[in-house]
Image (cartoon, rainbow, N blue to C red):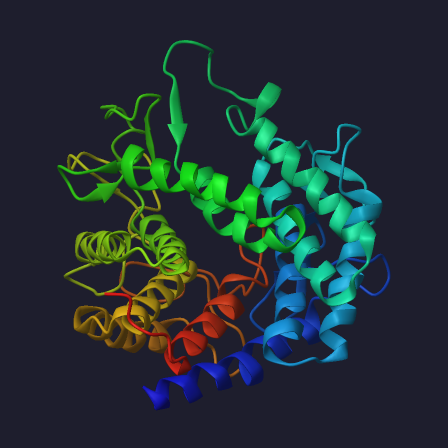
Length: 389
């Protein structure tokens, strides 16, 4: 796999990170531009808190794990100053969007702004030892735990008591976030949270009948025959499984590792477009028309997280199915998403694999999935991780 290590490391250092270093820094008002066209030109100046936190994490992690490049640390602190000055309401909850100067545009309805703010600041604390970053990260993390039963709070549009469903996204992200914060919240807190998260992900949201994980279930974990309850997001399942693989490896749990690999491969087989290749964005478990009109699009993060998952599955266990899927995904993904002319990756393809939009960043895509995945993939493939089974 040596050729893949070189390929992914080169893509990270020569094609992706330079794009964000060159085009995303708002030197006048602070923070980062994320709405970038193919050539890096800014097409909108609004700033989305979850993408600001993600870029802080990316730059800090690149400094910590890849190379102690002072420019990366400086970019991380540049973003942190902006979000600390402007990003929270009076309760300490993080707004979803600000204008370029830092004035609030969208209320803190989306708890993922909080998740990535704490993740970014915790990573930045690791390389700077500045107490302010750690304190805000811990305070935010505690607020996330307080809000996890009803993440949107007063901004929840659902009428109370009529259809009580819970979503997969938050326990999924907490499985990764808890590890990111271990150096500041402590191992005891993390281990307790891991127990709860593994149960939620692998038992409550997992449906043995289909072998898949649902996006929404009733509070008791049972199936809901509704738009929300029938929804399958293969990318979410696969991303969650590499989070779970890391937990299985941490605990030396061969049974959990095997289950993760089985679910991930099942999700790949289920989500793979047999006609045009690539992974479909959404499917309805009962083959009814999905609510999401973008169901057949091919998204950057879905394919990158699948590559990470298969690379880790192969590195941890030597599973040949993981290796075969990795090679299949690599052939599709690099040929469709990577832009060797201007740098970075396209985010959105149509079902046939052609770019729907030429943007490299926007409201939902920023400096996160591409660099994180490229790093995680080559790290996994060049590692000498002993098999646990």
